Image 1 (cartoon, rainbow, N blue to C red):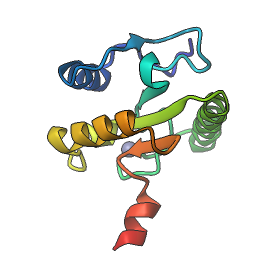
Image 2: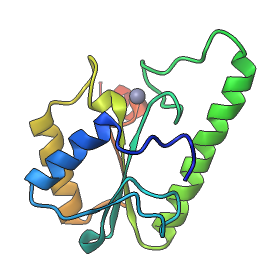
Image 3: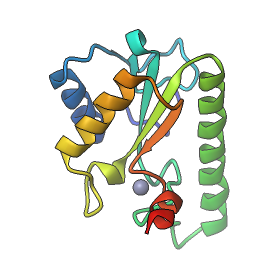
Image 4: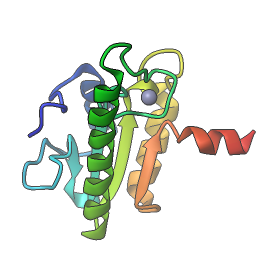
Length: 146
Ligand SMILES: [Zn+2]
């Protein structure tokens, strides 16, 4: 378990409450799986990571490199990000579908309303579509749409 993942953070609790209310059954912080996913839905072969935008270097408005020791932070956070991606690729190779829910999709001015978020999550989990999805959708996809 790495120090960058803060177990039982508030954003994660919000996601767990929503999943529970939608009738999903899940396990938490499954150490048997690579990357210790925050939430695991074994029945659907789905893992969910609830990621803080800073520690996981999200490409979003919330993320800012610290003004001091900037190079050091940049190396550290980039390494976190690359490790996340490697873990997610390996999980997908073993047949897991991966959802990343970013903190900025749960709170702050770019948050996605819970009804909209829940219906998206529910559909994606149940319909077994793509093997990787992010909430909110990556910025480049949003840009392409407009
Ligand atoms: Zn973000």
